[in-house]
Length: 636
Image (cartoon, rainbow, N blue to C red; front, top):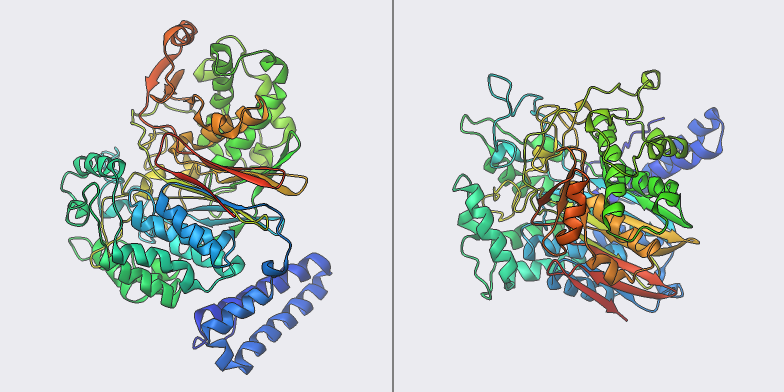
């Protein structure tokens, strides 16, 4: 049943949001507790009551401060709760994000307030991946309950299935990666607005204050940021306005972004409307306007964008409850499939040393089957009937695990998607997996993890896709736009920038969200948060998270050692190719043993930047990946 909000448009946006929330909550409760007729009666009555309250008290409804107070009064007051943990903790990609979180937590904010503050701060100080011009996923545990927020970018309403193909039907190189056509409709501001207004404790303006300060007063770029800037200047090759905005950045020299400060101030004043409507929206539209005066992203694209609350994937595994990302993420499905298949194959792993040739081979065999399913069945659930329950079903995963060859690599041609014969359940039959075009893995995305003293937790992964996105800076606004359109299957069967093949489920369509590997994940035990984890890395995201989790759970490694340990990756195609990283290379006798089994070893420049927090008793232990420039910080 759908109930429309019949409230005055004159109401302040947060006030309208409260009405919508009241209606949604009433409808949910009524649906869960009453008969069909009673459902309609109860939900309709609640809707009328919500609208009456807002229209009967217009002055209060129009006051942002009163709206914030009303929202907070509907939740348990954390200041009256007994702290569950000895400290709060963050693990984040740079020190400015950590400083922002520490400030917000010291001012009485909770994990969600701190997460929003980090997200906006990284948009200023970590411009290669932190963003307001991109999107992402947030997994939360608040007051012991799991939530998931999808604020992934959407394809513009003018997007077409063949928009990146030439007259011969072939993919045009870089068209979906560089320049205006590469950008999807951004979701980050809507995501932070939704999360903070639902669960935050502090006024919205207060949460944005650290980011505004860094944009206006400046921050000091480090060598790694400049190194990444220089590399992507070459890739953009003067095709965008990237150099005009970021060409002047220098190591150790304060860098100010006054245009970005103005945008953040509008968002602080007006909420999500300060981004999706008005001056900022018009700047986005004008920047992306094509040479023949067509708007590539329109006012309708921006005003209609909504972040979506979805049910997270939840799975029991070795005494933990794994809470992770549902579609349009493939990462949560892949993570659960890998964890459960390895558990099903426990006898084959008994006595096998971590990261030995036998261990790596058997994990690669699992990964083969996970990526076969990813290519065939996963996409935006609002457009495609993703068979989620079947893909993480215990019996199905036992069947898939039984296909693993413990000694030699399986023939790639024989590793097919596993739900064949289920067309009657809305599952598409396999179409075969062609060899992908070669594509070099690029570092992208960023993740942060937050835990507060009340035991609330946020795992947030968000992205511009490639570093610095499409290389397009919004004129007069100073922020970068994503190149997320490359995450669609521009031509089903042809690989994207991460070398990953997609099929019909991830084909381009107007308003659709592209498939992602992002997998912000929280593990709980006995109802309490045990681990908060995530990483960048494109298709390597969930294989990296899997390795860290199993290093801790199966090999009893301290979290810091588990994060620093060797990582490897296999994704079905190219055939029998293992990707390794310079930080902990596959070399020497290990390399020889794997090559003798028939594997091709391929070096990649990047395999994650894990930010994780483990809870031991009542003590959080934050860990940042030694591969990056992140900060792990306890705050008592």
